[in-house]
Image 1 (cartoon, rainbow, N blue to C red):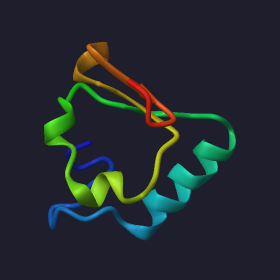
Image 2 (cartoon, rainbow, N blue to C red):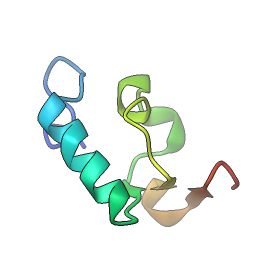
Image 3 (cartoon, helix red, strand yellow):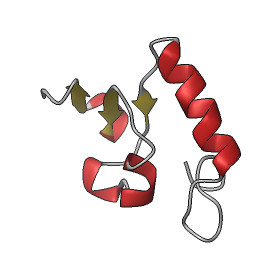
Image 4 (spheres, rainbow, N blue to C red):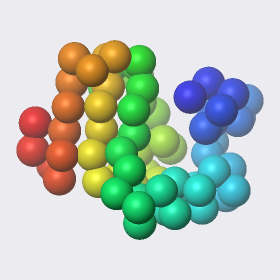
Length: 65
């Protein structure tokens, strides 16, 4: 995510948020090597249907772990 989804200011650019919304419409999830506690509120506020974090050690779908 660093430099890919989040800019140097720690915010998700509108263009990245749009791409995420389009991916969600296609049934995509957030996948990251980061642990859940490393996902800043600005990242999670974009909205995801599920998260695969910590290189697959943590999985959440629809609010269920």
